[in-house]
Every structure is written in structure tokens, then in C-alpha cells.
Length: 346
Image (cartoon, rainbow, N blue to C red):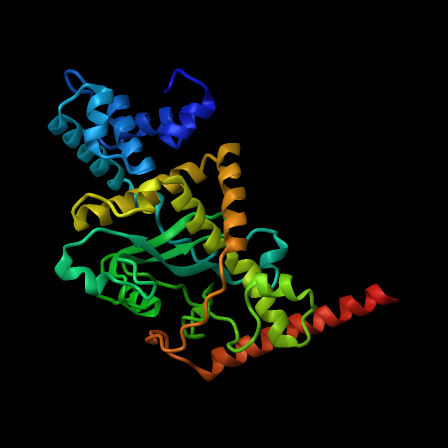
């Protein structure tokens, strides 16, 4: 695979040749992964990438690599541990002073650090636990909180919650002070969230009962008629980064799209490892990722619009000051829009 074409290498290992080489070097130098008597680090990493990239069972790798099932399992586990040891290096919250990029999507959200949402990943659990892990689509899944920045990189992830748990409940758990990896929002900054979360300090949500999704605007072919509609449109364009991140993440690592054969604890560890690999690859963007992202955008456009969950558990306290902040921001956005529209007509 490595000696073949660039496309063939990417299709199989989900990384370019250069990225695969860099990953192996990093696992050697920083994580202590070593060649064994008969298996080199490159072969170990390739086996792991085939498992997470395509959801292959280890029994299928046995015929390809001519190794025993125990040997393959041992090496896959070793690579998983090594990648997870880099979790703190690749997935970390941004500095409070970082500024958003010079992008029109983020023009009105200068104090935003990114966006967040929940993402369901199919998992395999014992029959006795399936009721707790069943989400509202009747799929057995884990609900993962994902916080991303403007460049589609994960800043914070918390997988493991049952699929029946609401997004805001998972957020509430992530912010518990007793957690060593607690999710913290710097004072004066915020993240964009959808209507399933409360519009509270640190989390800027859209207006309810007002058009929001980009597809709603595209299908209606109408311009915003008031401040709330325009605010929701601008909010949706910026927050779309989290949908694209989840889409690319699942598109690239096939094990996230189907129920895995691993124990649930190992499945959660693999989800974390795929987040590390995602950020590793985003640091080294390649045109092959862009092709996948184009497919993701088409799939997002074709997905049906889901109704807002009005009965979510609330985890962020509503304050008059934050409500007034959102109202003032929406009015400022609309005022600038009216002036710009008037200038175009002159």
C-alpha cells in the first residue's frame, strides 16, 4: 500500500504517504512504540488504521498479514494506547486570547472560540444495556459532546454517554468541577450552540420558532425579514463548522459508522483515538481530505431537517444580561444589513 499510488495509500490507510510516515515517526519518538522481532512499527500502525479506517475485523487482517490473531490484537492495542497518549497534545482548549479568522462567517461572532454539538456514534453493547443506549432514532449509540474550532479541529470531546442522554445533559457533565478534564469557557468568550442548548453565559444559541437551518433559507429563496431571522442565518452559517467536522470525521474513519466488535470501553477509546487522528490530519491538510469534505457537504445538504428538542435538560443558567446580549447582537446585525441593502439599491 505504501509503495503504491498516493490515492491507493489514502484509500486504504486514510492518510497520505507523508502523513503515515510522520505518524509512525511520532509514535516511535514520543510514545515509545517500537519494532518487535517480526513486526515493524509501520506494519503495526497500518493494521490499526485498516481497523479504524474501514471497520475491518482482525480475522480479515490475519490472512493479509500472515500473523496470528493474538499477534494482530496485541499490536492494534499497542498502537491504540500510543495514539491515546497524545490526546492532551492534539485535543486541547484554545487560549482565551485567540482570535477568529478573517472570515465573513465569523464577522459578527468575534468573541466566539468555535462551536459545539452532540454527535451519535453507533456502538455495540450487551442486550441488557441496549435500552439505555438507544437514541430517539432507535439506534444503539453513544452521545459524544464535540467542541470544534473554526479550522474543523476538535478542542474537546466527551464520548461515553448513553445514546438516550440529551446533548445538554452531556454538556452539563463535561463542566462538572470535579472532572480533571472539565470543559471550561473563558470569561468573555463563548461557543455557538444549536437550539438544543440554553442560550446562557458562554453559549450563544439561535432564536427558537424562527427559521434557522441553511436548507430552509435555500428552499424558500427569501431574504431575512427581521433581526431574528438574519441573526439565525448568520449563526447557522458559522455553526455549520461543527456539522462539517463530524461529517468528515465519520466519513474518514469507517469504524465510527457501524457497530464495532470491541468491548464498549474499547469502543470509547477508539472514538477518542479517531479524534486525535482527525486533528493530526487537519494539521497537515491535503487535497484528498478536501474531496471527502465535498462529499460531506453534499450529504449535509440532502439530510432532512430535524425539529428542535424543546424538552432538553438545561445545563446553562439563563440570565437577562446574556439574553439582552443576543438581542442587541441580532439588532446590530440587522441594522448593518439594512444599510448595506439600501446602498446596493442606490
